[in-house]
Length: 189
Length: 375
Image (cartoon, rainbow over all chains, first blue to last red; front, side, top):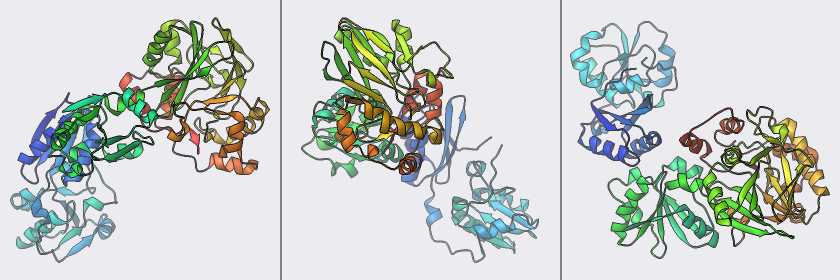
Protein backbone atom coordinates (compact mmCIF):
# COMPACT_ATOMS: atom_id res chain seq x y z
CA UNK A 1 0.00 0.00 0.00
CA UNK A 2 1.17 3.53 -0.62
CA UNK A 3 1.16 5.86 2.32
CA UNK A 4 1.96 9.53 2.14
CA UNK A 5 4.34 10.91 4.69
CA UNK A 6 5.74 14.41 5.10
CA UNK A 7 9.17 13.37 6.35
CA UNK A 8 11.24 10.21 6.05
CA UNK A 9 13.71 9.24 8.74
CA UNK A 10 16.37 6.68 7.98
CA UNK A 11 17.15 4.68 11.11
CA UNK A 12 18.22 1.53 9.28
CA UNK A 13 21.05 -0.46 10.86
CA UNK A 14 20.79 1.60 14.02
CA UNK A 15 20.11 -0.12 17.29
CA UNK A 16 18.15 1.00 20.26
CA UNK A 17 17.87 3.85 21.38
CA UNK A 18 18.84 5.60 18.11
CA UNK A 19 15.66 4.97 16.06
CA UNK A 20 13.57 6.69 18.73
CA UNK A 21 16.16 9.42 19.35
CA UNK A 22 16.16 10.29 15.64
CA UNK A 23 12.37 10.15 15.46
CA UNK A 24 12.03 12.47 18.43
CA UNK A 25 14.44 14.99 16.88
CA UNK A 26 12.54 14.98 13.60
CA UNK A 27 9.24 15.20 15.45
CA UNK A 28 10.43 18.29 17.35
CA UNK A 29 11.05 19.98 14.00
CA UNK A 30 7.89 18.81 12.25
CA UNK A 31 4.66 20.79 12.00
CA UNK A 32 1.62 19.61 13.95
CA UNK A 33 -0.42 17.14 11.92
CA UNK A 34 2.54 16.08 9.76
CA UNK A 35 3.29 12.39 9.33
CA UNK A 36 6.74 10.90 9.83
CA UNK A 37 7.86 7.74 8.10
CA UNK A 38 10.60 5.99 10.09
CA UNK A 39 12.59 3.22 8.46
CA UNK A 40 14.30 0.91 10.93
CA UNK A 41 15.81 -2.55 10.97
CA UNK A 42 15.83 -3.07 14.75
CA UNK A 43 12.84 -5.36 15.50
CA UNK A 44 12.56 -3.77 18.95
CA UNK A 45 11.70 -0.45 17.31
CA UNK A 46 8.11 -1.59 16.78
CA UNK A 47 7.10 -1.87 20.44
CA UNK A 48 9.23 1.12 21.37
CA UNK A 49 7.70 3.35 18.69
CA UNK A 50 4.22 2.49 19.95
CA UNK A 51 5.23 3.08 23.56
CA UNK A 52 6.98 6.34 22.79
CA UNK A 53 4.05 7.68 20.76
CA UNK A 54 1.66 6.81 23.53
CA UNK A 55 3.77 8.44 26.22
CA UNK A 56 4.25 11.64 24.20
CA UNK A 57 0.72 11.92 22.83
CA UNK A 58 1.70 11.59 19.16
CA UNK A 59 -0.45 9.30 17.04
CA UNK A 60 1.16 5.99 16.12
CA UNK A 61 -0.57 5.08 12.85
CA UNK A 62 0.88 1.72 11.99
CA UNK A 63 3.87 -0.12 10.56
CA UNK A 64 4.64 -2.13 7.48
CA UNK A 65 7.55 -4.39 6.67
CA UNK A 66 9.43 -4.55 3.43
CA UNK A 67 12.40 -6.88 2.95
CA UNK A 68 13.49 -6.75 6.56
CA UNK A 69 12.94 -3.01 6.93
CA UNK A 70 10.21 -1.91 9.31
CA UNK A 71 8.45 1.28 8.26
CA UNK A 72 6.65 3.06 11.07
CA UNK A 73 4.20 5.94 10.60
CA UNK A 74 3.67 8.48 13.35
CA UNK A 75 1.67 11.68 13.17
CA UNK A 76 2.62 14.71 15.20
CA UNK A 77 -0.16 15.65 17.55
CA UNK A 78 -1.83 18.96 16.97
CA UNK A 79 -2.52 21.15 19.99
CA UNK A 80 -5.28 22.86 17.96
CA UNK A 81 -7.20 19.61 17.98
CA UNK A 82 -7.70 19.78 21.68
CA UNK A 83 -8.59 23.48 21.67
CA UNK A 84 -12.21 24.26 22.38
CA UNK A 85 -14.18 24.97 19.28
CA UNK A 86 -17.93 25.15 19.59
CA UNK A 87 -19.14 21.61 19.16
CA UNK A 88 -20.94 21.00 15.91
CA UNK A 89 -24.59 20.57 16.73
CA UNK A 90 -25.49 17.57 14.62
CA UNK A 91 -23.61 14.57 15.91
CA UNK A 92 -23.68 10.87 15.06
CA UNK A 93 -22.30 8.27 17.43
CA UNK A 94 -20.12 5.46 16.14
CA UNK A 95 -22.99 3.03 16.71
CA UNK A 96 -25.46 5.18 14.78
CA UNK A 97 -23.05 5.43 11.89
CA UNK A 98 -22.65 1.65 11.81
CA UNK A 99 -26.41 1.37 11.22
CA UNK A 100 -26.24 3.75 8.27
CA UNK A 101 -23.37 2.24 6.32
CA UNK A 102 -25.68 0.41 3.92
CA UNK A 103 -27.60 3.59 3.04
CA UNK A 104 -26.76 4.86 -0.48
CA UNK A 105 -27.52 8.44 0.46
CA UNK A 106 -24.87 8.49 3.15
CA UNK A 107 -21.30 9.60 2.50
CA UNK A 108 -18.62 9.04 5.13
CA UNK A 109 -15.96 11.74 4.84
CA UNK A 110 -12.67 10.85 6.55
CA UNK A 111 -10.64 14.02 7.19
CA UNK A 112 -7.58 12.36 8.74
CA UNK A 113 -4.18 12.33 7.03
CA UNK A 114 -3.76 9.85 4.16
CA UNK A 115 -1.41 7.69 6.24
CA UNK A 116 -3.96 7.39 9.02
CA UNK A 117 -6.64 6.54 6.45
CA UNK A 118 -4.37 3.96 4.83
CA UNK A 119 -4.05 1.85 8.00
CA UNK A 120 -7.79 1.47 8.45
CA UNK A 121 -10.96 3.34 7.56
CA UNK A 122 -14.71 2.83 7.33
CA UNK A 123 -15.41 0.89 4.10
CA UNK A 124 -16.19 3.28 1.27
CA UNK A 125 -15.18 6.40 3.21
CA UNK A 126 -14.00 9.33 1.08
CA UNK A 127 -10.55 10.60 2.08
CA UNK A 128 -10.02 14.36 2.13
CA UNK A 129 -7.56 15.54 4.81
CA UNK A 130 -8.79 18.53 6.79
CA UNK A 131 -6.04 20.74 5.34
CA UNK A 132 -7.23 20.09 1.76
CA UNK A 133 -10.94 20.33 2.38
CA UNK A 134 -11.48 23.90 1.25
CA UNK A 135 -9.73 23.18 -2.09
CA UNK A 136 -11.50 19.91 -2.70
CA UNK A 137 -14.96 20.68 -1.41
CA UNK A 138 -16.39 20.31 -4.94
CA UNK A 139 -15.69 16.58 -4.80
CA UNK A 140 -18.61 16.25 -2.39
CA UNK A 141 -22.27 16.28 -3.33
CA UNK A 142 -24.49 18.70 -1.46
CA UNK A 143 -27.56 16.49 -1.52
CA UNK A 144 -25.78 13.66 0.32
CA UNK A 145 -26.01 13.05 4.04
CA UNK A 146 -22.39 13.57 5.05
CA UNK A 147 -20.91 12.03 8.19
CA UNK A 148 -17.50 13.51 8.92
CA UNK A 149 -15.09 11.32 10.82
CA UNK A 150 -11.53 11.67 12.15
CA UNK A 151 -9.65 10.06 15.03
CA UNK A 152 -11.34 11.66 18.03
CA UNK A 153 -13.98 14.03 16.67
CA UNK A 154 -11.96 17.26 16.72
CA UNK A 155 -10.77 17.59 13.15
CA UNK A 156 -14.14 16.39 11.94
CA UNK A 157 -15.73 19.08 14.08
CA UNK A 158 -13.74 21.75 12.19
CA UNK A 159 -14.58 20.11 8.89
CA UNK A 160 -18.31 19.95 9.67
CA UNK A 161 -18.32 23.67 10.42
CA UNK A 162 -16.51 24.34 7.12
CA UNK A 163 -19.00 22.29 5.16
CA UNK A 164 -22.05 24.05 6.58
CA UNK A 165 -20.37 27.41 5.97
CA UNK A 166 -20.13 26.35 2.32
CA UNK A 167 -23.82 25.58 2.12
CA UNK A 168 -23.95 21.89 2.94
CA UNK A 169 -27.23 21.22 4.76
CA UNK A 170 -27.05 17.66 5.91
CA UNK A 171 -23.79 17.25 7.84
CA UNK A 172 -23.03 15.25 10.99
CA UNK A 173 -19.91 15.03 13.11
CA UNK A 174 -19.09 11.45 14.13
CA UNK A 175 -18.08 11.14 17.77
CA UNK A 176 -15.80 9.83 19.06
CA UNK A 177 -14.55 8.59 15.67
CA UNK A 178 -11.95 6.08 14.53
CA UNK A 179 -10.12 5.86 17.87
CA UNK A 180 -13.01 3.78 19.18
CA UNK A 181 -14.45 2.43 15.95
CA UNK A 182 -15.34 -1.26 16.28
CA UNK A 183 -17.32 -1.60 13.06
CA UNK A 184 -15.98 -2.90 9.74
CA UNK A 185 -12.81 -1.33 8.33
CA UNK A 186 -10.75 -1.65 5.20
CA UNK A 187 -7.13 -0.81 4.46
CA UNK A 188 -5.46 0.57 1.35
CA UNK A 189 -4.11 -2.19 -0.81
CA UNK B 1 30.95 7.68 34.92
CA UNK B 2 29.41 4.44 33.75
CA UNK B 3 30.72 0.90 34.06
CA UNK B 4 29.48 -2.34 32.63
CA UNK B 5 28.22 -5.17 34.81
CA UNK B 6 28.21 -8.66 33.30
CA UNK B 7 25.37 -11.16 33.56
CA UNK B 8 27.73 -13.32 35.63
CA UNK B 9 28.26 -10.51 38.14
CA UNK B 10 24.51 -9.98 38.40
CA UNK B 11 23.97 -13.74 38.85
CA UNK B 12 26.50 -13.84 41.66
CA UNK B 13 24.82 -10.90 43.40
CA UNK B 14 21.45 -12.60 43.11
CA UNK B 15 22.80 -15.84 44.59
CA UNK B 16 24.80 -14.09 47.35
CA UNK B 17 21.76 -11.88 48.08
CA UNK B 18 23.73 -8.67 47.65
CA UNK B 19 21.61 -5.58 47.26
CA UNK B 20 21.24 -4.17 43.78
CA UNK B 21 18.85 -1.56 42.42
CA UNK B 22 17.84 -2.08 38.80
CA UNK B 23 16.36 0.57 36.56
CA UNK B 24 14.86 -1.43 33.71
CA UNK B 25 14.40 0.85 30.69
CA UNK B 26 12.61 -1.59 28.36
CA UNK B 27 8.99 -0.92 27.48
CA UNK B 28 6.33 -1.70 30.06
CA UNK B 29 5.05 -4.89 28.44
CA UNK B 30 8.52 -6.41 28.32
CA UNK B 31 9.09 -5.58 31.99
CA UNK B 32 5.73 -6.97 33.04
CA UNK B 33 6.39 -10.18 31.14
CA UNK B 34 9.82 -10.84 32.58
CA UNK B 35 12.56 -9.11 34.57
CA UNK B 36 15.60 -9.71 36.77
CA UNK B 37 14.40 -10.91 40.16
CA UNK B 38 15.87 -11.98 43.46
CA UNK B 39 15.38 -11.46 47.19
CA UNK B 40 18.02 -8.72 47.26
CA UNK B 41 17.01 -7.12 43.97
CA UNK B 42 14.86 -4.03 43.87
CA UNK B 43 13.76 -2.85 40.46
CA UNK B 44 11.70 -0.19 38.76
CA UNK B 45 10.63 0.30 35.16
CA UNK B 46 10.84 3.49 33.15
CA UNK B 47 11.12 3.10 29.37
CA UNK B 48 14.19 4.83 27.93
CA UNK B 49 12.03 6.65 25.40
CA UNK B 50 10.40 8.55 28.24
CA UNK B 51 13.82 9.84 29.28
CA UNK B 52 15.07 11.24 25.99
CA UNK B 53 14.97 14.73 27.48
CA UNK B 54 16.50 13.77 30.78
CA UNK B 55 16.29 11.55 33.81
CA UNK B 56 14.89 14.08 36.31
CA UNK B 57 11.75 12.05 36.81
CA UNK B 58 13.59 9.02 38.15
CA UNK B 59 16.48 10.62 40.00
CA UNK B 60 14.42 10.87 43.18
CA UNK B 61 13.62 7.14 43.10
CA UNK B 62 17.23 5.97 43.03
CA UNK B 63 18.45 4.83 46.46
CA UNK B 64 21.63 6.53 47.59
CA UNK B 65 23.34 3.57 49.25
CA UNK B 66 22.93 0.86 46.61
CA UNK B 67 24.68 0.02 43.38
CA UNK B 68 22.49 1.03 40.46
CA UNK B 69 22.25 -1.07 37.31
CA UNK B 70 20.45 0.12 34.19
CA UNK B 71 19.13 -2.73 32.01
CA UNK B 72 17.57 -2.76 28.56
CA UNK B 73 16.91 -5.31 25.83
CA UNK B 74 20.33 -5.32 24.21
CA UNK B 75 22.61 -2.71 25.77
CA UNK B 76 22.48 0.57 23.83
CA UNK B 77 19.60 2.19 25.65
CA UNK B 78 20.93 1.25 29.07
CA UNK B 79 24.23 3.00 28.29
CA UNK B 80 22.29 6.00 27.04
CA UNK B 81 20.29 6.27 30.27
CA UNK B 82 23.19 5.27 32.55
CA UNK B 83 25.28 8.14 31.20
CA UNK B 84 22.61 10.69 31.99
CA UNK B 85 21.97 9.14 35.38
CA UNK B 86 25.66 9.08 36.30
CA UNK B 87 25.89 12.76 35.48
CA UNK B 88 22.74 13.69 37.37
CA UNK B 89 23.72 11.70 40.46
CA UNK B 90 27.45 12.36 40.20
CA UNK B 91 28.33 8.73 40.91
CA UNK B 92 29.11 5.51 39.08
CA UNK B 93 26.13 3.86 37.40
CA UNK B 94 26.32 0.37 35.90
CA UNK B 95 24.73 -0.90 32.72
CA UNK B 96 23.96 -4.55 31.92
CA UNK B 97 26.49 -5.85 29.41
CA UNK B 98 24.65 -7.43 26.47
CA UNK B 99 21.29 -6.49 27.98
CA UNK B 100 18.46 -8.82 28.92
CA UNK B 101 19.33 -11.01 25.93
CA UNK B 102 22.61 -11.95 27.58
CA UNK B 103 20.95 -12.25 30.99
CA UNK B 104 18.42 -14.67 29.50
CA UNK B 105 21.25 -16.80 28.14
CA UNK B 106 23.54 -16.79 31.14
CA UNK B 107 24.18 -20.08 32.93
CA UNK B 108 25.85 -20.07 36.33
CA UNK B 109 27.52 -23.37 37.22
CA UNK B 110 27.35 -24.44 40.89
CA UNK B 111 28.71 -27.58 42.54
CA UNK B 112 25.85 -29.70 43.91
CA UNK B 113 27.88 -32.44 45.49
CA UNK B 114 30.26 -35.36 45.04
CA UNK B 115 29.25 -38.94 44.36
CA UNK B 116 30.16 -41.75 46.69
CA UNK B 117 32.80 -43.73 44.88
CA UNK B 118 33.95 -40.72 42.85
CA UNK B 119 32.48 -38.22 40.48
CA UNK B 120 30.74 -34.86 40.90
CA UNK B 121 27.45 -33.24 40.00
CA UNK B 122 27.21 -29.63 38.82
CA UNK B 123 24.04 -27.66 38.33
CA UNK B 124 23.86 -24.89 35.71
CA UNK B 125 21.38 -22.31 36.91
CA UNK B 126 19.80 -20.18 34.22
CA UNK B 127 18.49 -17.44 36.49
CA UNK B 128 16.94 -15.49 33.65
CA UNK B 129 14.57 -18.27 32.70
CA UNK B 130 14.51 -20.74 35.56
CA UNK B 131 16.12 -23.63 33.66
CA UNK B 132 18.37 -26.09 35.46
CA UNK B 133 20.74 -28.34 33.57
CA UNK B 134 23.48 -30.62 34.80
CA UNK B 135 26.97 -31.88 34.19
CA UNK B 136 28.13 -35.11 35.78
CA UNK B 137 31.86 -35.60 35.95
CA UNK B 138 33.58 -38.96 36.20
CA UNK B 139 37.37 -38.86 35.91
CA UNK B 140 38.05 -36.90 32.77
CA UNK B 141 34.72 -37.69 31.16
CA UNK B 142 31.35 -36.05 31.56
CA UNK B 143 27.67 -36.28 30.71
CA UNK B 144 25.27 -33.35 30.37
CA UNK B 145 21.58 -33.61 31.23
CA UNK B 146 19.06 -31.42 29.39
CA UNK B 147 21.70 -29.15 27.81
CA UNK B 148 20.57 -25.74 26.56
CA UNK B 149 21.51 -24.20 23.23
CA UNK B 150 24.12 -21.88 24.79
CA UNK B 151 26.73 -24.57 24.29
CA UNK B 152 29.68 -22.26 24.93
CA UNK B 153 28.89 -22.25 28.66
CA UNK B 154 29.25 -26.04 28.79
CA UNK B 155 32.32 -26.00 26.59
CA UNK B 156 34.03 -23.44 28.80
CA UNK B 157 33.16 -25.34 31.95
CA UNK B 158 34.25 -28.69 30.47
CA UNK B 159 37.57 -27.09 29.65
CA UNK B 160 37.86 -25.73 33.18
CA UNK B 161 37.23 -29.22 34.61
CA UNK B 162 39.38 -30.77 31.92
CA UNK B 163 36.73 -33.28 30.87
CA UNK B 164 35.48 -34.65 27.59
CA UNK B 165 31.70 -34.65 27.21
CA UNK B 166 30.62 -38.09 25.99
CA UNK B 167 26.89 -38.14 26.66
CA UNK B 168 24.19 -35.58 26.01
CA UNK B 169 20.87 -36.65 27.50
CA UNK B 170 17.48 -35.02 27.13
CA UNK B 171 14.88 -36.26 29.62
CA UNK B 172 12.16 -35.36 27.10
CA UNK B 173 11.48 -33.39 23.96
CA UNK B 174 11.57 -29.84 25.30
CA UNK B 175 8.91 -27.25 24.50
CA UNK B 176 10.26 -24.29 26.47
CA UNK B 177 13.83 -24.08 25.24
CA UNK B 178 15.94 -25.23 22.34
CA UNK B 179 18.06 -28.23 23.23
CA UNK B 180 21.83 -28.07 22.90
CA UNK B 181 22.12 -31.86 22.96
CA UNK B 182 22.31 -32.54 19.28
CA UNK B 183 24.66 -29.69 18.47
CA UNK B 184 27.07 -30.60 21.30
CA UNK B 185 27.03 -34.23 20.19
CA UNK B 186 27.71 -33.29 16.57
CA UNK B 187 30.42 -30.80 17.47
CA UNK B 188 32.35 -32.96 19.90
CA UNK B 189 31.51 -36.48 18.79
CA UNK B 190 29.34 -37.37 21.80
CA UNK B 191 26.19 -39.47 21.87
CA UNK B 192 22.77 -37.81 21.98
CA UNK B 193 20.18 -39.72 24.01
CA UNK B 194 16.43 -39.04 23.76
CA UNK B 195 13.39 -41.04 24.93
CA UNK B 196 12.07 -42.83 21.82
CA UNK B 197 8.41 -42.15 22.64
CA UNK B 198 9.08 -38.40 22.30
CA UNK B 199 11.10 -38.87 19.14
CA UNK B 200 8.44 -40.05 16.69
CA UNK B 201 8.91 -37.04 14.44
CA UNK B 202 12.61 -36.47 15.05
CA UNK B 203 14.56 -35.99 11.84
CA UNK B 204 18.06 -36.99 12.94
CA UNK B 205 19.93 -39.88 14.52
CA UNK B 206 19.72 -40.32 18.29
CA UNK B 207 20.32 -43.07 20.82
CA UNK B 208 17.01 -44.28 22.31
CA UNK B 209 16.82 -43.69 26.06
CA UNK B 210 14.72 -46.67 27.07
CA UNK B 211 13.47 -47.62 30.52
CA UNK B 212 16.11 -49.50 32.49
CA UNK B 213 19.00 -48.57 30.23
CA UNK B 214 22.25 -47.84 32.11
CA UNK B 215 24.90 -45.49 30.79
CA UNK B 216 28.25 -46.07 32.50
CA UNK B 217 31.19 -43.74 31.90
CA UNK B 218 34.48 -42.40 33.18
CA UNK B 219 37.19 -43.53 35.57
CA UNK B 220 34.70 -43.53 38.47
CA UNK B 221 32.27 -45.76 36.55
CA UNK B 222 29.37 -43.42 37.25
CA UNK B 223 26.06 -45.08 36.37
CA UNK B 224 23.11 -43.21 34.89
CA UNK B 225 19.96 -45.33 34.91
CA UNK B 226 16.92 -44.43 32.81
CA UNK B 227 13.60 -44.58 34.67
CA UNK B 228 10.49 -44.15 32.51
CA UNK B 229 8.24 -41.50 34.10
CA UNK B 230 5.70 -40.16 31.57
CA UNK B 231 3.25 -37.32 32.09
CA UNK B 232 4.85 -34.05 31.02
CA UNK B 233 5.38 -35.74 27.68
CA UNK B 234 4.65 -39.35 26.79
CA UNK B 235 8.38 -40.12 26.65
CA UNK B 236 9.52 -38.26 29.78
CA UNK B 237 12.24 -40.30 31.41
CA UNK B 238 13.95 -39.62 34.73
CA UNK B 239 17.59 -40.41 35.40
CA UNK B 240 18.93 -42.01 38.55
CA UNK B 241 22.64 -41.47 39.08
CA UNK B 242 24.52 -43.92 41.32
CA UNK B 243 21.23 -44.54 43.15
CA UNK B 244 21.78 -41.16 44.84
CA UNK B 245 20.40 -38.43 42.60
CA UNK B 246 17.06 -38.40 40.77
CA UNK B 247 16.91 -36.08 37.74
CA UNK B 248 13.20 -35.51 37.24
CA UNK B 249 13.25 -33.34 34.11
CA UNK B 250 9.94 -31.48 33.81
CA UNK B 251 7.88 -34.02 35.77
CA UNK B 252 8.52 -32.92 39.34
CA UNK B 253 9.91 -29.63 40.61
CA UNK B 254 10.68 -28.47 44.13
CA UNK B 255 7.58 -26.35 44.60
CA UNK B 256 5.33 -27.57 41.79
CA UNK B 257 4.69 -30.36 39.32
CA UNK B 258 4.94 -30.69 35.54
CA UNK B 259 2.17 -29.74 33.15
CA UNK B 260 0.82 -32.29 30.68
CA UNK B 261 -0.42 -29.97 27.95
CA UNK B 262 2.52 -28.71 25.92
CA UNK B 263 2.04 -31.21 23.11
CA UNK B 264 -1.72 -30.59 23.06
CA UNK B 265 -2.58 -33.84 24.82
CA UNK B 266 -3.37 -32.77 28.39
CA UNK B 267 -6.37 -35.10 28.69
CA UNK B 268 -4.42 -38.09 27.45
CA UNK B 269 -1.31 -37.53 29.53
CA UNK B 270 -2.75 -36.44 32.85
CA UNK B 271 -3.28 -40.09 33.81
CA UNK B 272 0.38 -40.85 33.12
CA UNK B 273 1.41 -37.83 35.19
CA UNK B 274 -0.73 -39.06 38.06
CA UNK B 275 0.75 -42.53 37.90
CA UNK B 276 4.33 -41.27 37.79
CA UNK B 277 3.92 -38.87 40.70
CA UNK B 278 1.63 -40.91 42.93
CA UNK B 279 2.87 -44.40 42.20
CA UNK B 280 6.12 -44.86 40.29
CA UNK B 281 8.12 -42.23 42.21
CA UNK B 282 6.66 -43.41 45.53
CA UNK B 283 8.27 -46.78 45.03
CA UNK B 284 11.72 -45.26 44.72
CA UNK B 285 14.18 -44.71 47.59
CA UNK B 286 12.81 -41.63 49.37
CA UNK B 287 16.34 -40.45 50.18
CA UNK B 288 17.06 -39.83 46.51
CA UNK B 289 18.11 -36.23 45.97
CA UNK B 290 15.74 -34.67 43.42
CA UNK B 291 17.34 -32.40 40.81
CA UNK B 292 14.65 -30.90 38.52
CA UNK B 293 14.99 -29.17 35.15
CA UNK B 294 13.38 -25.95 36.41
CA UNK B 295 12.93 -23.80 39.42
CA UNK B 296 10.05 -21.37 39.78
CA UNK B 297 10.89 -19.09 42.68
CA UNK B 298 14.14 -17.60 43.86
CA UNK B 299 13.50 -18.95 47.35
CA UNK B 300 14.16 -22.45 45.99
CA UNK B 301 17.86 -21.56 45.69
CA UNK B 302 19.98 -22.28 48.74
CA UNK B 303 22.81 -19.99 49.87
CA UNK B 304 25.12 -21.41 47.20
CA UNK B 305 22.54 -21.11 44.44
CA UNK B 306 21.68 -24.81 44.40
CA UNK B 307 18.17 -26.18 43.88
CA UNK B 308 17.45 -29.64 45.32
CA UNK B 309 15.47 -31.60 47.94
CA UNK B 310 15.00 -35.27 48.80
CA UNK B 311 12.09 -37.14 47.29
CA UNK B 312 10.75 -37.75 50.82
CA UNK B 313 10.76 -34.02 51.55
CA UNK B 314 8.81 -33.33 48.40
CA UNK B 315 6.16 -35.90 49.36
CA UNK B 316 5.80 -33.93 52.59
CA UNK B 317 5.80 -30.41 51.20
CA UNK B 318 5.17 -30.13 47.47
CA UNK B 319 1.48 -29.23 47.17
CA UNK B 320 1.28 -30.98 43.79
CA UNK B 321 1.90 -34.28 45.59
CA UNK B 322 -0.84 -33.80 48.19
CA UNK B 323 -3.91 -34.16 45.99
CA UNK B 324 -5.41 -37.47 47.10
CA UNK B 325 -8.47 -37.38 44.88
CA UNK B 326 -7.73 -38.33 41.29
CA UNK B 327 -10.59 -36.27 39.87
CA UNK B 328 -9.38 -33.22 41.74
CA UNK B 329 -5.84 -33.85 40.46
CA UNK B 330 -7.14 -34.12 36.91
CA UNK B 331 -8.98 -30.83 37.33
CA UNK B 332 -5.98 -28.99 38.81
CA UNK B 333 -3.57 -29.97 36.04
CA UNK B 334 -5.89 -29.55 33.07
CA UNK B 335 -7.73 -26.39 34.10
CA UNK B 336 -6.28 -23.05 35.13
CA UNK B 337 -2.98 -23.83 33.45
CA UNK B 338 -0.63 -20.85 33.08
CA UNK B 339 -0.17 -19.50 29.54
CA UNK B 340 1.92 -21.74 27.35
CA UNK B 341 5.56 -20.73 26.84
CA UNK B 342 6.23 -18.32 23.99
CA UNK B 343 6.69 -20.09 20.65
CA UNK B 344 6.44 -23.54 22.22
CA UNK B 345 5.31 -25.15 18.96
CA UNK B 346 8.25 -23.71 17.04
CA UNK B 347 10.61 -24.77 19.82
CA UNK B 348 9.32 -28.36 19.69
CA UNK B 349 9.75 -28.42 15.92
CA UNK B 350 13.29 -27.08 16.27
CA UNK B 351 14.10 -29.84 18.76
CA UNK B 352 12.73 -32.40 16.29
CA UNK B 353 15.08 -31.07 13.63
CA UNK B 354 12.19 -29.78 11.49
CA UNK B 355 13.28 -26.16 11.74
CA UNK B 356 16.67 -24.51 11.56
CA UNK B 357 16.23 -21.04 13.07
CA UNK B 358 19.14 -18.60 13.09
CA UNK B 359 20.56 -17.36 16.37
CA UNK B 360 18.42 -14.24 16.48
CA UNK B 361 15.27 -16.28 15.91
CA UNK B 362 16.31 -18.74 18.62
CA UNK B 363 16.72 -15.90 21.09
CA UNK B 364 13.35 -14.49 20.13
CA UNK B 365 11.65 -17.89 20.52
CA UNK B 366 12.96 -18.36 24.05
CA UNK B 367 12.33 -14.89 25.39
CA UNK B 368 9.98 -14.65 28.36
CA UNK B 369 9.45 -16.45 31.64
CA UNK B 370 9.51 -20.14 32.49
CA UNK B 371 6.05 -21.62 32.15
CA UNK B 372 6.62 -25.33 32.48
CA UNK B 373 4.97 -25.95 35.81
CA UNK B 374 1.50 -26.21 37.24
CA UNK B 375 1.79 -24.02 40.31
